[in-house]
Image (cartoon, rainbow, N blue to C red; front, side, top):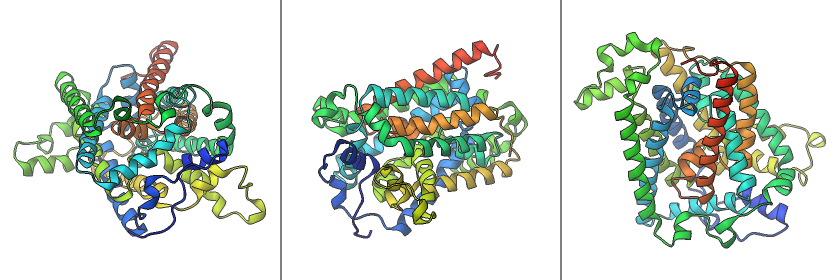
Length: 425
């Protein structure tokens, strides 16, 4: 750890610049920042686990995501429940044991709610995020594993996402004044951004209960919809080999985890959820992926000559992300490692390029909407769904239902209008 001045996160900064007020320094500002070596090392290891979990569970495939919104596949929901449940239990433990990192990450995430009205932020942003997921068959985190695994059109989703991040960065001031400053805010107006604060209960009690419920739902889904029935048909021959037996002894089970081209989605979810621990303890934040797009969309200002740079006072949002900082830039090695391991694993399984993409226009436009909506709503599928909900952030519990509603509506209308070609199984 190294002690240095910590700039505000993007929402704290926006709260001050757009509302013309000076927010009180958050609690995490008094703690030493993680060093760059520890941040990079930890995020690389996390990214390898993250990418492998998404690749082996096959949740990264457009068919898995589109099928989930039509309730024809349940891979995504199994991973979602497994990751949220595991993460909630780990965060409950950190809270119960009074680790200072937990209070730090809570302070870091508060401004996300404080700078957004419910309807204009998590509801609108969440619904658009779901629509973008249905269109592209991706989310900001999964698309990196998809690209690494050679999924056709995934690069267009990434390109659309980078453009979405750039446009939002340029128009963040307008979005704040025209949308996010408007509408009801509920308990966030009285400084109760987390559900446990509104209910007057200890965080660890509610989080532990949430973890148990989510993991129970994950196990129930695995029982009701056996995971082997959802493995892509192209892997049928490989799944019949002894390497996919997942034997009862630890040695054979671990061997199957690497050698088998598919995992039970619940295992992938458990692994992703477990990553909340190093994220909290080292970077003192929670999982997310969309910030990587925001950083890459803004980093170009670091290489332009001074006379070509956009006005800093007019576009402060861009400069927050363009400034290297471990609390935001950690996602770059994180997602890069996910690409690398998905590429390596897919080639080892002889399945590189096996998954079918969404098509150029759905991928590109969907990617744009994914990232623009994530910035508008204050979080992506991981940020709100896996992290915000596990942390009991009230706005995340608004954003996630809106995300599923937007994705389901888009998928159903598209499936009917296309005569069934949106999802062909």
